[in-house]
Length: 635
Image (cartoon, rainbow, N blue to C red; front, side):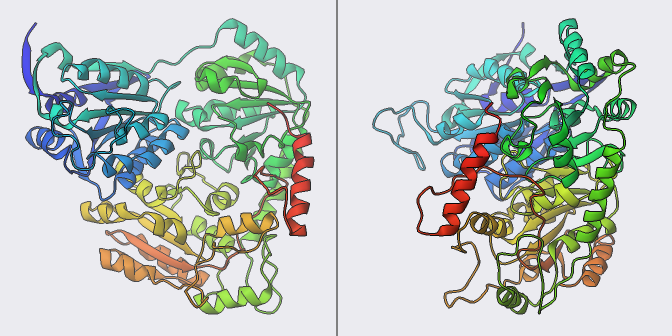
């Protein structure tokens, strides 16, 4: 067996170039490139290796470690977890900045490879710059913070350790049941140390994404449960999208008259125009989905984690309903005390379809009626206009008319958020892709955004991480370079992180940012006031209590973007049409009125409410919470 002498970092780069994924007869490189912010701890190791020979890997200079990691996550998500970018950072603060992004990848089961630098394996220069010191152990470094948010974690302190570590990391990232972030920390002196690696380690390695087939026992019981049910409902989760189950879902739903409801990750697996698709379920769900779910006697969860937003904190269901889960993850399949099919979604549904011959649900025309009712409500939401004298915002009217008028005067706008959002939906091209993540916008888009082309909805809500929106848009554009990409972002999240907007402009990857500015953390302000509180540090106000009015368009113009200001529907539509003609990244700044987003539609969210308070409004909410918990499923 031949040997090749390389540094640890050079060996890692060479290995990344030789990893391939095999899916349904197709074979392609698994690692597309590397996002990098270079600093001490990785520039002389990983940086040198990439500069010397990056192979086919595209290297992109990030501006913030969390931001570029979110871009890598969005890329993998848009590629249905079949391709990744690696992410390399320096030691200390650089690696610490990965933590929020790693949590995002873990919560959403998205594969991404993190390669942060680490302290010296020899310990002779210790403590090096940016090294933390713990008295109980000298082995602790900043990278230990990444352990709880990594699916696989390792620290390399000798060059030969790289071989087994990398094989294990790629086993995890290419397994649909375990997919998530893999973190390999490399001591900065070891990055540059050389070793005689076996040449076989660098031969082309194919990772097979085989579809796990359900066993006869699982299929038999699933058929029994479905045929015994009168009103089954299918919850379409992210696993259904990654499995490519669109066609079989539609066939099964249509043939047996079974309604589909969606999670955030599952939305746009099946287009909104499909007659049995009732939209999002739960706290951010539609009235149609929430009403049909309460009628269900069997709930079929496909590739879902059953988060509290999807289940309305487990109050969404009829307590007599049974559960059947289809999931490649055994952990997720066991949730809600369900009967488990631990197998690929598409393969399982393909086999179930003929076995249910002769069955039909008892929903009759109810699915159509509920969908028509919701479409009428969406149409109403698309036409809401503000009046200064007697405006009644959508359910969320905790503000007085005077306070709404104050916002209208300060922001020079009368724009309503739901009306603006539907206008965006109607004007942009149907094959465009939207990105959102946090604040009130994910609730609005899950309810009223109608994707009529599959996989055009990239919303991160497993972790609801502020800062994903613009970074994610860059990642999606890398994955879909011929499509228009729109980042829907609130002003709070824009201020939190928009560093990769600059990266998109720098590299010529056109993204479109649509900024909804209501001068505050509006979603959390709603949470305060919905639960009996006041407005406490969730509005953006100056030292003399005036509403903050930031010129975001000027900020983006300074970066080199084409910018627009749109405070009316007419201005918004004109701006959207013009963005289509641009070759550079764009930003549309919209001032929107607070309290004009959508609301819960018969859903409930269990949040911690003070059981002792001097406010009667909080006392009432606390008592209501106790009553809700008594009726919630206790799984």
